[in-house]
View (cartoon, rainbow, N blue to C red):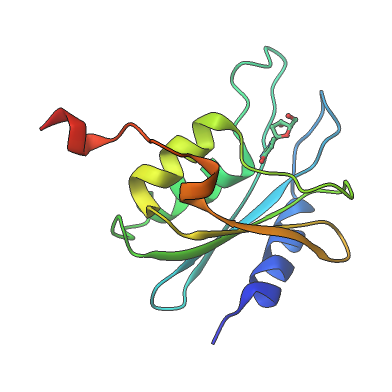
Length: 133
Ligand code: THU
């Protein structure tokens, strides 16, 4: 069974594909489904900056667009170089919450896991579809 360490390894490999031409800040992500599939992603930047896509969103959109159902995710790993944990940005937290709910977010650098938090801890009092009903 895939655990945090294997997921972090997959995110480290995905990070190698990052296109961080503007920031030089490379990020990899790996999203685990409940049935053991892994979707990876990296950040892809562009010259207008605003169109940049984060690693987490790349992984999530890959999974959903390849037919993975919403709410079938078990854990996500995020890898960047700093010693301090690199948490998902605000927009990624929102999307992850809406499609994955309260999954563990494993943050790691190139050598070790730096922090693990539940998504609900990273996004307290979330806005989501329940409020639209
Ligand atoms: N970035 C991610 O891909 N994920 C994160 O969790 C934090 C930030 C990217 C966006 C941008 O390409 C670069 O890191 C610097 O912000």
